Amino acid sequence: MKIKETFLSACAVAALLAGTAACTSDGDRPADKAGPTTGAACKNGTYTWSDVSKKDILTGVSEKQKIGKGGALTAPRKPLHTPRTAVTFEKGVRGDAKAALLSLGVRIGEVSPDDSGTSHEFAHVGRAAPNPVNRISVTAAGTFVDYAWVREVTGDFRYACGTEKPVTGRAVSWVIDGSGVLECSEPVVETGEKHAMEASLLACGPDAPAAKA
Image: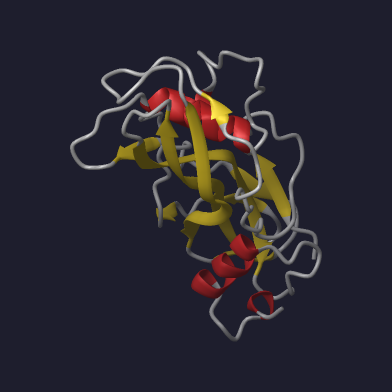
């Protein structure tokens, strides 16, 4: 079955990437130059990243809805996960959250190293989560499920310059959000995506064809 996927606000991501993205290894990569920090141990230092990962996470799923001749899906999505953009610093240490997020954006290729990133939504601490409202229609009969997902990015960092005491912490944001529709009686064979499979298991049930790889 062809799964309908809709991208909502993709932060410069132009196309759907199949499956769950694997973790990236950063042990052999150079540190990123940072912008000025506020209340941190030093200024104009470097960020070194570890345990950077991208993961597709289901954020909402509707109950299954039977449609006779096509039409709008009216069952609301039940929230499962609220994505966030935030930085957690080591206890007792303050740092520049936006600078840390911009550095993470550079690390994963979301932010250009030559871009100041002052308006880049990837680095907007506390930015609003994707709109949970779903307005999707289908043209055929069947039992349908509507779902939404994000590609979340997390990473641990160490910020330092010279002999000053380093600042450590963890940053989280997301690079893409989207939605899709699946039909419970047809296997998810075209994309095989983790978020679609999870939605089918939750809404259609484990015995439904859509829930079986």
